Image 1: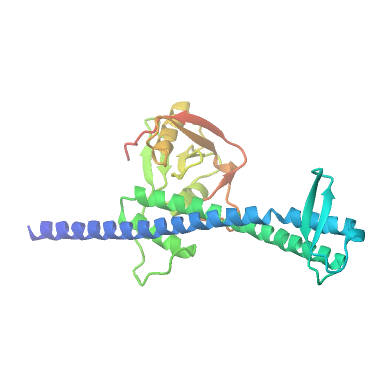
Image 2: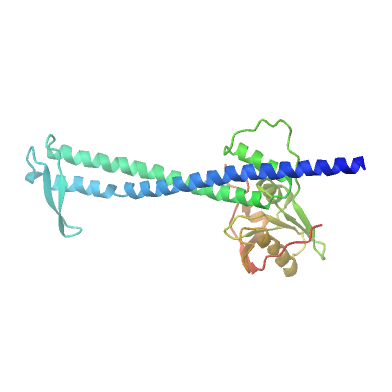
Length: 293
């Protein structure tokens, strides 16, 4: 009886630890997503502001084209813009001559042009960060084991999104989900980015099939072919699992991409779980929960 009670309290303690860690991590990731969404909105506004640079180039061009009309101490130039067939008023600095007024506008133009390049870079990084954090949040929502949550936490530390915890104990390794079809094909399903990377770039060989729900966070799914042709029924079965373990699980039908492992590539410095491929097909399938091996 004592052994049964000890086991019960041990499992209860693990469950409480899993729930608390998951809730804490989800809160952190959700907060990061909010922060990135606000940053994205700010960058988009700044990019719109940077795009007005062409106006300053036009002002500089028109000042140079109308130098003969400008006298020292003039505060404004009225010039005809042949592009719009309209007269426009351009503010002048009365302490500067025409050439220096034009240079002043060209400087503004060049400054905004440089700022726009930087903003476009920041925008790309922020958008990629949002996609990555969306995938992390999905993995946390799907996690049912403490080991999976610990691996996600470790990944967030390695990618610089959270600070290292004081926990010294090395997290227990979790395993991907596995299904064996009635034809004897093994199907593996990743439960977090670490597992997804392992399945796609360590376990899978070139003729294995890779699947993922199109355009949404979800698991990498691998069919081990052992150099056999994968039957349509097996492909559809694996696709239904990829659909189920995705953000689109609640949809009646989900589009799933599939390709051979040999077509996968991980870009240099890409975040965990990120892949690109140069050749793929897709199918529409109903999500289905697998019966696990």
